Every structure is written in structure tokens, then in C-alpha cells.
Amino acid sequence: MERFIYADNAATTPVSREVIDAMMPIFETHWGNPSSLHEKGREAKDILDDARERIAKVFNCNSGEIYFTSCGTESDNWAIRGAAMRMKTKGRTHIVTTKIEHHAVLHTCQSLEKEGFEVTYVGVDADGVVDLDELRQVVTEKTALVAVMYANNEVGTIEPIEQIVEIAHAKGALMFTDAVQAVGNIDIDLSKLKVDMLSLSGHKIHAPKGIGMLYIRRGVVINNFVEGGGQERRKRGGTENLPYIVGLAKALEIAKESIGELDKVRAMRDRLIDGLTKIPYSKLNGHRTERLAGNVNVGFEFIEGESLLLWLDIAGICASTGSACSTASLEPSHVLIAMGIPHEKAHGSLRLSISAETTEEDVDYIIENVTSIVKKLRDMSPLWEEVVKKEACVN
Ligand code: PLP
Image (cartoon, rainbow, N blue to C red; front, side, top):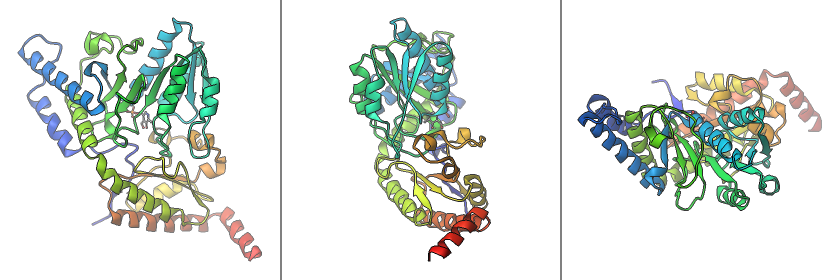
């Protein structure tokens, strides 16, 4: 049988059998509209309330703090725009974010800049960790919101969110974290992590595409983003996507229960990193230890990441060069550039995002194939020829 290895779980994940089984009765039987007053509606409303309660339990928060959305992008847009517009009424028109955020955050901030908000994009160090000294300097009494991702989708670096919350709150600003990649990787207790808002997305944790969530701490008021009926306590209009909400609740419960399995994933990740960085002129991107359990991001000089991807695809390995949303672009990753990696080196990066489904044999197969493909691509490169010649002279 031909080999197939899915190592692109940061882009999306397959919907798990348990999640499908949890959703099926909603499609088949409990298909009512939770807003309807009749029996079918009341039944749906009970299921909706139950899913919200179960999710609140996962995060140790109140069910009234949970709002369902259509995806991570919508949650990010809502959190930032909703907070900015609300805080403007208090004279706060400054937003602080980082240079390595997902485009759902960066593009929202850019559009707010056009509407008169001032946005500061804080830098990161060579490992992708947010510069806390710079953050302390730029957050002021004018700052409405500090938006920093919990973990980066490309290089996997986990950010010091607790410290960032303190910096934001010291100046009376709201703190929002995009936890789309962190959820499922980190056990998040919202009674301890004092963020004001947190976004997540179902399809990164084995729930379907098209369901997201925004946590808004009780007492925090932000403007609506999607106007409509009275759903989600009048904060987000649109008939609730009940099957997917139930699927999300199931996926979050499974993710919490299986957090212990991540040790095995971390061990495979580290073996992959060790194996791939044995290749000459290669470098790990992102923090060595403060990184997502399944994330491997390695840069290879003198090759193009896209060519590597195509050859890996032929070998049955699904990987990525960066985030799935920007793979159509030939621009080097804004994350790697912010980390100080030169353009030519940023072009040769490979992201592998493995999961508990990955096996030790898969790890061996990936290392073997990446090693031979990088060699093959370099053998075709005039730049590499120069390197070989130079090395021959030195020796
Ligand atoms: N934020 C981060 C960090 C992501 O990785 C992604 C998706 O890749 C998103 C936001 C967008 O989520 P969605 O695909 O659900 O819109």
C-alpha cells in the first residue's frame, strides 16, 4: 500500500469518529431551531445549553462567557473590532499587537488603522517570543486592547501570556489572545489565565470546519460584530449551528482528556527536529522547548520550500511551508521575517505538524525523505554548487 502521512495538523485536522457520532443525532433527530418555542425548539435549546455548559467545564469558566461563531477568523475579527469600537467611547484609540499574528488579526488591525486607530506591532526575538520590554514601553493609558496570540501557527512558539495580561491590565487595557493553535495543546484554565477574550476554532481539534468560539470574560463589554436576531444573548446573530456546536463540545472534552498523550507527540517532535537539523545548512525555527507539542519548523538553505513540499507530496507526506492561508503567496513568511531570518533563508522553510496519530515509523520515513529530497534539490541548484566549490577550497 502506498504511504500516506498527514503532517499538516496546524492547517486542519480530520474530524474524529467520536465527534461525528456526537453530531449525527443532531442532524437526524434534534434538528430544531433553539429559538423556537415549541417542543422541537426546546429540545434543541436544551442541547445547546448542555454543550455550552460542557465547554465551560473544559475551560473552568462560566457558560455565559462562551459565544459561538463560525470560525477562528470571525472570533478574532469580533474580539479586536468589538473591543476597539467599545473602548474608543472611553477615549482609548490605540491597539497593541505583534508582528507574528495570524492574518485574521493583522488584517483586522490594518483595517482599524484606516479608520483612525493607532496600531503598534511589537517585535519578537529570534525564537519568536514577544519582546516584553518593548510591550511594556508601548502599552499606555490610551491603549484599548493588547492582542497577542497564545501560540504561533507557523513556528509553534508559545507566548508568555500570563505576563502579557499583567502588562495590559496595568494600564487598563483589555487583553485578547488568539488561542486557535494553543487549544488542544495546552490545558487552559480561564479562572487562572486572566485574559479578557480568547478565540478558538473547531477544525484544529478534530471538530468540523465552520465552528469557532469566542470567550468574553464576564463584565467585559465589546460591540457586536454580526448583527441579527437574539441569539448568543443578543451578541452574535445567526441561528446556532447546533450539530457543530455539539461536535465542538465533544472535541474539546476529548482534547482535555487526552492532553497526557502529548508527551508522546513531543518526543516524536523532538526526534524529528534532531533528525532534520542533522541535514547540513538547516536550522530549527521557533523556540526549542516553549513550542507546541506537534510543531516542527526547519529552514533549509539553498532550496525552495515549495519544491520540497511537492516532492514530499509525491512521497505521500502532507506538510506545509507556513500557514495554509498564505501558501498561495510567494512572499516569505511575515513570522520568519519578524524573527530576523533573511528573505532567502525564509523561503526554504518546512512546517510539519504531527499529532497523536503519527507513528515512530512515520517519523523515520519523514526524516529519510526530507533528507534525500533536500539533497536532490540542492544537487540541482547553482547556489549549492558554489557552496560545494567553496568548501572544497577550504578543505
Ligand atoms: N488564528 C490562528 C493562529 C490560526 O492558525 C488560524 C488558522 O489557521 C486562524 C486564526 C483562523 O482560524 P479559522 O481557519 O477557523 O478561520
